[in-house]
Image 1 (cartoon, helix red, strand yellow):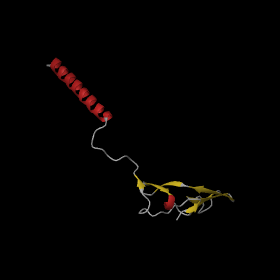
Image 2 (spheres, helix red, strand yellow):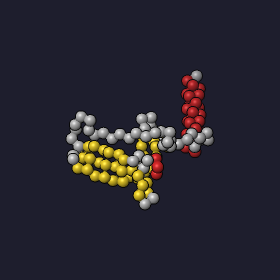
Image 3 (spheres, rainbow, N blue to C red):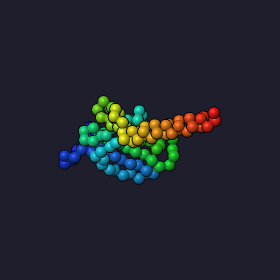
Image 4 (cartoon, rainbow, N blue to C red):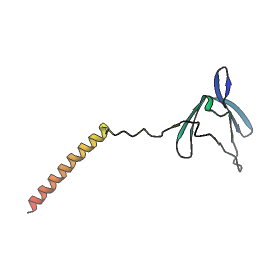
Length: 116
């Protein structure tokens, strides 16, 4: 549904602020939905146009609304896919934790020996 000129697909963005209007072309758009998923829109997946209204705080002003069909827009995960192999940082933390546990246990046993 995007507009097309010279084999380039784009979305028309109209920005109205205090009665002044600017029109721009957007070739790629990143949108985060209510569930937190990030959608990367480009090419045919772009909407035809978006209109933004800003300015003095009137009721109903300062609104940008993007409606898209999540079945057509591919979502990008917010975090990396989980891996089952530990990272080097996690291995270091595990080893350091075991060493500190051993040192603390040895100190406790030594203090118990000295009290008896």
